[in-house]
Length: 301
Image (cartoon, rainbow, N blue to C red; front, top):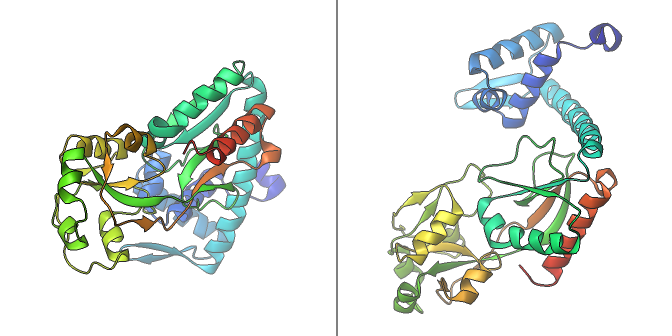
């Protein structure tokens, strides 16, 4: 019935196309939709046949959108975004005032969870659900907002700047004492703890050294996919971690980690509170958002 009224292709093909266009990858779209890449490719071919146009330019290592594909993706992204907001608003009315906020595990442990506890003490009737993961938030229908380093690619999401951090090398007190005043070349030769993340906006050790002007090689070391694990390894003297100065302030203040002066880099991106526009948030969600912004202004992070 909906196709007769709106003259739409099957919604399954539109959903497969939107995911593939957002990721510019049939494989990643398949992972998100819990189907095979072949199934996504089949849906795209069916949609291209229905529209009698090519939506993707197939390349050896991926795909790009054609002009028609880009136009369709922008329309779908905007429409799906608005549908998601309406659905979340309806769910929120049924949830008894629940607020859902997301972050990485490190942001949750180092800053967000203590902030939420302080909020709950002031507003004990508001239930706050926290979602913590070290990969980008892609399924966001039930989430009011999340903390992200760098801007999200979804144009329908609101971005409220939080702060811009500084990147410093950190280590255990013993290691930091040994390396006090060390040159970039000396630091590059140390055992470095490397963070592997799906989110390519995070600054890595190679990025950090390159932006500070070090052209030489840098040492290898353990690789982890959790920033919290990287910090724990550094605490135990297992190497140097790349520290986000404001974010890890509790660990610096306690002496569990020590910065290695004098080298630091202003982070290329800001941290943002990303989510639905204020007018689409519940009163409780707006209250938590304002609380988080006040926490930043007060210097808790």
